[in-house]
Image 1 (cartoon, rainbow, N blue to C red):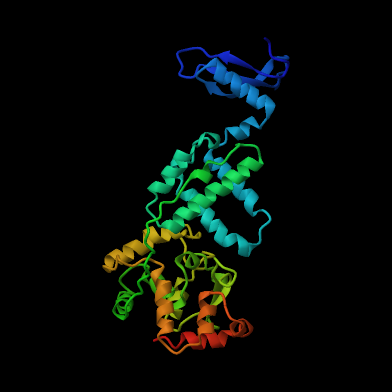
Image 2 (image 1 turned 90 degrees about the vertical axis):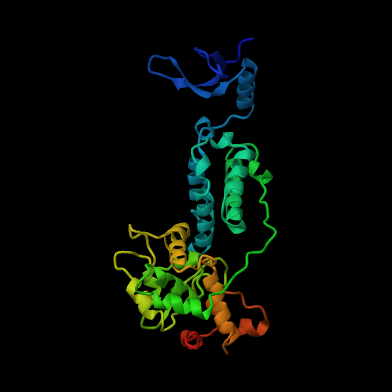
Length: 346
């Protein structure tokens, strides 16, 4: 039986093909009145092609969107996600989604609608980084599928079936010893970028926060900078600058870049690039490969815990939430008080 006008049809393609049947629908007419077609796809059997045609006519969708790759879908989702979001809300989420995208290179050019659970699971399973990175990858997938379903590009989310195999062990944070910190200082003029390690140790900055610090938010004379993200208490917090690292930060500030830490193009350096091009090389050269970049923050917290410093001040510097009523009332510690606290470190 002939299909109704405008319904589309199935044609058999020439040659010896694995999928010789194509489902297509009318996409207008040329200047001579000849029909123009858009193809829904190719199929192994005429029955499968007819199924696709029936499905399309029962639930019409944008064919071009259905052909979009994972990379293209990410770009659409990313733009939509952050178009009406405040800067403070954007920062940590952007980093998480960017991390998820960067670790998915193996599927960047695959059609999004053709992805299955196995493709997504393979990305997670082959990721050599920790559970937090894998969680960011999966978060990215879940949000992308949510966006795709809202826009009728796919009908279900395969991300919901993906799992993260837990290692069963919590990552141990190992603070740098006094001897190791001294070794860092001893090599300040001989090992490239070693200053970035000391800056993190004496500020408590996370590595992801360090690469986000902008020069315009550094106040050398007043000895503080503004930065941080991840939590409400940690976003855009005041970070006092210890006198020992003041010259390190001053030397780092480059008029040609907006960022304290930047790549060769003077643009913001990603955490992944920092880890691979700075951190791992420094640790290997100093035979400290047992340390992770987050150990710097733990080192700062440990050093502050070992001296007589008001714990509210420490929480303010680290960006931790204040938990009891007394702490929440006593939150207006000024910059001088935070500097005084930090200067108790040797």
